[in-house]
Amino acid sequence: MRIVFMGTPDFSVPVLETLIDSCHQVAAVVTQPDKPKGRGKEIQMSPVKETALRYGIPVFQPVRARDASFIDEMRALNPDVMVVIAFGQILSGELLRVPRYGCVNIHASLLPKYRGAAPIQWAVINGDKETGITTMMMDEGMDTGDILEKRVIFLEKKETGGSLFDRLSLLGGELILSTLDKLEKGALVRMPQNHQEATYVKKISKAFGEVDWAMDGAAIERLIRGLNPWPSAYTWLNGKLLKLWEADVLPDAGQAFTERGGGFAAADRAPGTSGETPACGQVISATEEGLKVQTGAGILNITSLQLEGKKRMDTGAFLRGFAVQEGARLGRS
Picture 1 (cartoon, rainbow, N blue to C red):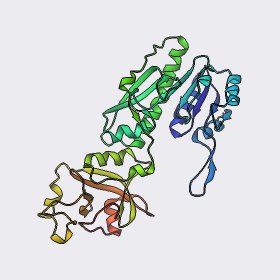
Picture 2: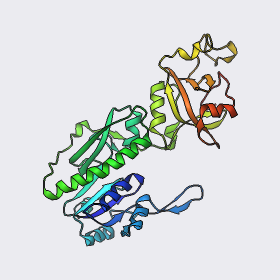
Picture 3: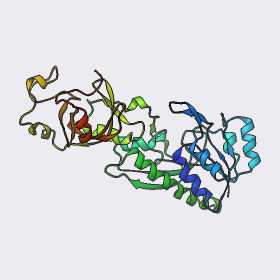
């Protein structure tokens, strides 16, 4: 089949490379315009553009994919199908009607669950047992088109947003070949989505990663994994930003207290607390084993972190160069 591929970030690249290596012809690649990135604000190409140029494939970068001039360029290419994965713009009905077989989208969830942005991170953050890849025939809605095929995978115990990203990206390449083969043969059965079962997930910003220590420890641990490597979960230590990379939830909330033989001295207790119950965000102990912190329910043991201006390191190494007092509070002062 003659394909126009539409995608932008790293997640799209394995699918593009799979199509290039297949029996199909990638006639052109459409991606977002080059943008300034980093501290130096240097103009950078998208990962998809870099890949396309490496293979000598023509690249189109419309500011608005709805513009008539761009749609005319796509018609001139005479594609059999458009394959879309994480492109970053809503496509008009006019553009969707250009390819002979329509536009096939690859979405990183089991639709109709997790329509919209960041389905990968949300699957980890919400503690889902399984997720997967869906191919669907695009319409003018947000991930509302008929389902073509699905592939399911199970999340690992310590799955991160990054590890799940990699697994689903590769799975998307496998599934699109199956979908295109059946589409060309007329063997696909289109299944309309049950819109009553649909859920939407919002785009994740850097601010979303700030830890609320009143949350339960398990939820914070999932947040840390879900936002690893981007944008990362974080808190504050003595006014400095502290990124949290790895953590465990202690099975017994009383474990941290028994290590010290009964809890805090009176001077270590946060204002408003009494007895052996520390406040949310308060450090229970700081040892080679980790930084144990009180949450809204249970103790979170932080084992890998990164202080502002420093490299990521395990907590034991961090504590050898930066003293953290028991009873200290994490979070904004």
